Length: 333
Image 1 (tube, rainbow, N blue to C red):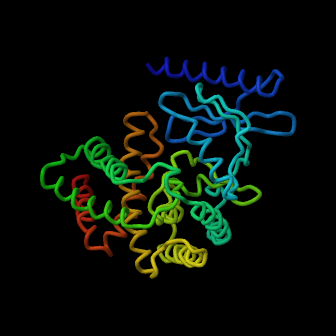
Image 2: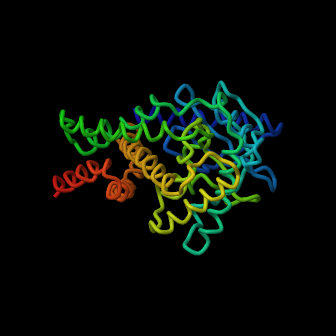
Image 3: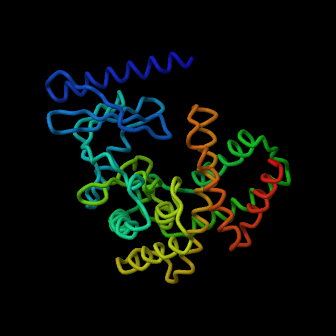
């Protein structure tokens, strides 16, 4: 089975090279791996003289390039630096894109440059949110929120931790999930990138280049800010996170975005929205290990547990999560 998957990938790579050569009108297009992600998409860099371009290989039916093309146009019109789509073959799942460079925020962020880089990231996020209007992107609705949350018990608790979901635990999880879903649904709606984090922000001119936006929805305004500062692969002191959230909140208010009138209310929205995301991602990281054979992501699960313990300690409605992690830790001894 593994051999057939690799053979299929090789065939797609060869087809991608032929397709890029056709777009250029010249032979010799050679694909060099650029990056992969948690999905089945792959990215290759092609050199053409002094210029480089990036091709996305998104094999259907599991992947679909059309949302990427649509959101690229949407965000580009808003003044956000996204890669231009140079050529497309949607039925085959091929895109040829402008190359925004090889360094992401994740490569260069440190305690000294973080304020400057995050200020630029806030600038771009405000442009995305100010362009928001209903009926353009799919809604980040209750069904999506609940489906995401169920990844945590299904893949993290049952599959990874071999933890039985008995009736008592199911009741506890349902109560916590209800709090998180209702908090998200009560927020004002904007365009949501859904993975607005340092790994998807490029060091480019202008700063930042924004990528990996194909899953964008119309949803809670706190989602992208908390995603940016409580990252899947990089942690910051809580006081610094709070300061950056306040900076975003102040600038969003000045721009006329519909954030809550008090920072305390916004901060709680971010805490609860972050809890929903972090439970979801714990489930996703377990799923891509057990289903897709990608082990690296699971190593970062401890970071999400730390985030969840942090917010559970200051919001009584999330206290059952801290108790659950205590039980899991005790069982692992």
